[in-house]
Image 1 (cartoon, rainbow, N blue to C red):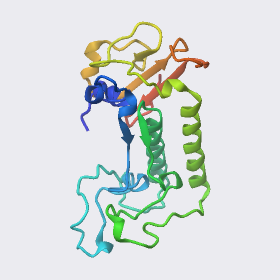
Image 2 (tube, helix red, strand yellow; image 1 turned 180 degrees about the vertical axis):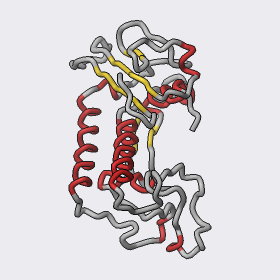
Image 3 (cartoon, rainbow, N blue to C red; image 1 turned 30 degrees about the vertical axis):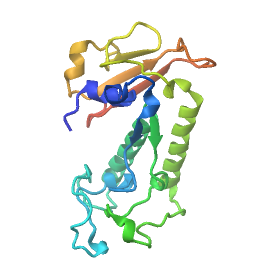
Length: 233
């Protein structure tokens, strides 16, 4: 996807370019990565295309535009490198969702690493394609704990749940205080940087001088690295 840093920052902070109207704030937007239609989170990083043969419509049903990526192997695999990459991608996607301003929507089962085996239109299935599996292996339990940790972070820090937008028309450099946007080298992002789509790295700092009542916490620092390589911040 060719989204720019500016577009990403707008989504991260509640999509004010879409929802900023009188009487509205970040809570006007629902953020989600997966929902009841389309791939679940595990399948989003395990399949490049839908596999709806079990639905009896010759795989014609369901959307063809799933934005899925299988990391080199379609579907289940024992390849440790592929499994590690998929696991990291799921953590990245869920972390970005939960740390974004707005109302996060989590698909039930994603926290349990549920798979529908590539079926993106499984409303007609009443079997292990759609049933939740509560018998988790070690990595699945770790992912469940990671989900709980993200939710606890969101609950502990009101700055992750603002009632007002932290910016208006587009992300701009801010005065020291509530929010600042920085590049990987720590420098504040200038207006010209928002139009870039490479490298996909960004730092967001939220200071304890937030005007939110009863908000007592240290500075929050959130790092995003959407490149394929390790990045030094």
